[in-house]
Image 1: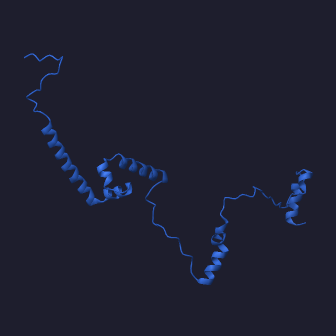
Image 2: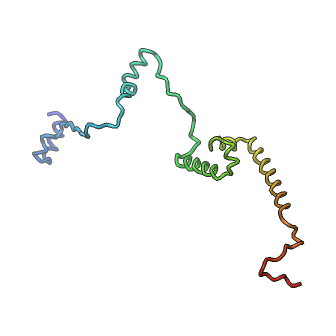
Image 3: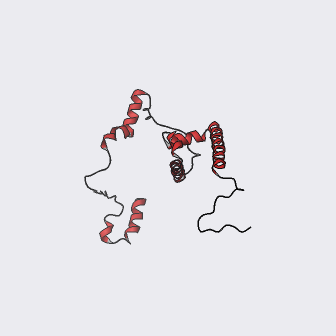
Length: 160
């Protein structure tokens, strides 16, 4: 007796007779999920590894990669963190005054402008100029503090 048959003889003592006929045999199992499929069969030839290798042997070159942006993104972080930052950036852009938003076609264009080193200096200079203009306007609109305006109706004048 071969070693395998010896092992099977030992196992068959503990296996019920209705299962014993299948011990040591492989059974093909098929799973029928229906006829509909969500897989596009038109890509079958382009994704079959045997056909890719055959094309390589004929031409001597690998198929061209589709156009796109390829780069090292190991320092970007987790997907969730990146999406959160992008959402926050869009919300920040939407909260800007319309004068600034009109200067940029997209939030991405604005973020690129802000992220450049030299544009940061321009933004600071623009903000400083606006602050000075706002301070001058505020000073000219407010009456001097030593001359109070007339009291409102129903209010008594302060006693001296």
